[in-house]
Every structure is written in structure tokens, then in C-alpha cells.
Figure 1 (cartoon, helix red, strand yellow):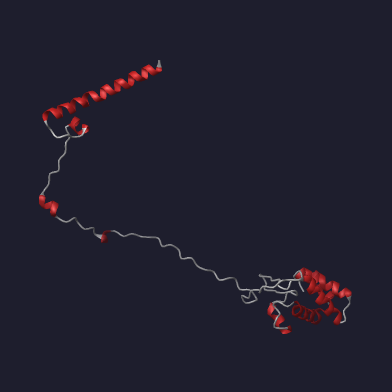
Figure 2 (tube, helix red, strand yellow):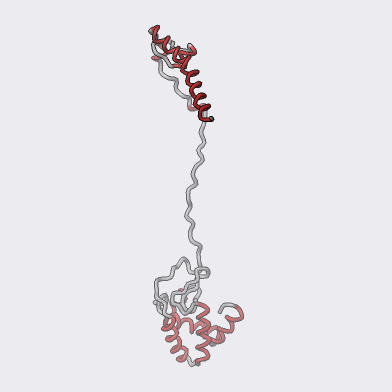
Length: 199
């Protein structure tokens, strides 16, 4: 039922639309008038351009740029920030392969050579394990401390040898000298570290 109603509705719409339009086209063809659009013929609204020939030859008016201004927001220029200065003066640690076991073996011989016993060596192991993990290339970017003994700055260890950046023996020599001069023994340095968090 609904389909039949829809078909009649479409048919009625087509007849209503084509009827007057078709009549207007047939009339225009019979009279020999030029073809125009259906919309224009039904409204008798055919337009033509009428104008002065001299106006057509004239150049178009130039725009006056002084009558307005344009503001373009500039793009910000990226700035490169310099890295924060550390007490190491911007120094970066070199590549080195840490070997904590070998470093501890070297330190053990040096501790005994100073006349300290195994108890002092145990304190030294605990101290430098806390400070650097016995890594020759341990670097604290915040403070600039470097090496097994965490010398601040690391370049202080150059007094023990030019290879202070990568040689565990040089670093340990400097570190034991520092501990002996400031705390007397590794256990003295360890006790201070336990109380204050540094040595």
C-alpha cells in the first residue's frame, strides 16, 4: 500500500514539474528565440551586459596599500640553552670499562702496603661501594665527583697520575692518600660517611 502511494506521489511531482517547464521550452523553440536556461525563461529574466566600450578598455584601479596594515606575529626563534655548569667545568667522563673486582684486588694490596689490616680494607670496600660501586668511570653529574673515590672534582686525581680518568690504580692511590690525610684510616672515613652521608 505504501509503495503504491509513493509511486503515485513521484508521478504527480514529475507531471507538475515537467508540465509548465516543457511548455516554456516548446514555446521558445517555436518562436526561434535563442536557448536560455529553464529558470531564466520561466521568469523572463534574461540578462544582458550593457556598458561603455571605453570603460572596458580602461585599466583596473590599483589598490592603495597605504590604507591598511597587516601584522604578522613572528615565529619565536628557538634558543639553545647551554648545559648547566658543573664543578668539573663541563668535563665529560671518557669511555672506560669498569672492573670492580680488579679494582678491589689492587686496593687490597695498597691497603696492606700502608700497614692497615683486613678490617680497614672491609671499611674501604663498604665506603667506595656506597660512593661509586668501585667503578672507575662513576660520574656524579650533579656535583662533578668522579672515579672510584668520587674525587671532587675528578681532576684532583691528576696529582697521582696523568691517567686518572681511566686507571683504577691511579684513582685508588689518590683516594687512599686523601683518606689517610683527612680521616687517618678507611674506617675513620667510613664512620664519617655513616654520620654525614659524605666523606
